Structure formats: C-alpha cells, structure tokens
Length: 187
Image (cartoon, rainbow, N blue to C red; front, side):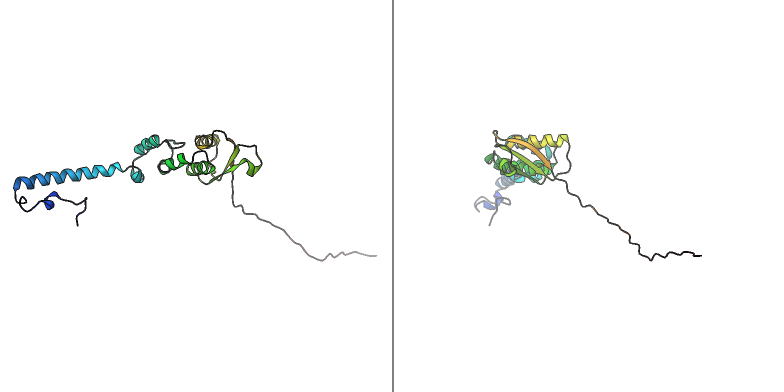
C-alpha cells in the first residue's frame, strides 16, 4: 500500500510507458518537487505545531489570534500556552473561568473570587495567587491580564498574594531542682 509521504510517480506508471527514459526522468523530477512541497505543507500546520515554532512565529500567531494579555517578554512556554488557548478563551470571554485560566497561565496558581464569595460590592471580584514574585509591576500586569479577558461591567478590587513558609519553631526551657539547706550558727 502506498502512502502519500513515500509515493513515487514511477511506481504508478503503466507498463506500456514505464521503460521510456524521458518519462522516467520526468517522474524523478516530479517526485523531487513533490517531496519539497510536502515539507513546505508540513509548515502550514501552524497551530498543531506551535510547540516547535520559534519565538518570532509564536509572537506573530499571538497577534493573529489576539491572545489575551500577550507580552513578548514572557517565557516561550507561557507564550505558547497563551496562543494555544486564545480561541477557547475568546469563546468564554467575560466568564470567571476564562479570567482564572488566563491569570493562572501567566502567573501560576491563581483563583478568582466573585463579590458574593467574599462580601464585596456587586460586579466586583478579586484574584488570589501564590506567586511570590510580587512587586508593583507584577500587580499591574496582573490587573492588565484580568482587564483583557473579564466582563467590562466587572471590577477588580484587589490582588491578594498568599505567602506560605515553613518555619522552625524552637522552644527551650530549663528546670532546676534541688534542696535548700540553711546552715545557722547558734550560740
């Protein structure tokens, strides 16, 4: 059985012309061009091959798919995840799940709490993360990422960063026991 990847035109020739040298030479030339074309066609499958694309091509795809909060300075793996999920996130845009997924992809483990879950004002939400690389730029990026995918009628109240650490607690004490002897001299 023939596969399109290893197909040769010579093998398909009928016996009446398979001996002609000009036809055989033409078939070899066509086979060579088909192989070149097949390697080029493989490059057209862009989205399925995103994990093998170079940095600049991933940047172009992010523009094409309008990846939510795409920053060219992000690590390549994060950029690929943003591009891969862009279409699904656009389908779910404005939902808590979409905000949570985008923020988690960019900044690591994060959750979104709606206003009624923490006693806030209606149409407000807050984001909780365990990412410890927090500074003012980080918080601004967080807000920008949420702004890109959230409902326009909802407002981000705050970003809470949870810090956890294992601390060794040492307790010391001393116990001294003894008899008290008092010596007096009389007389």
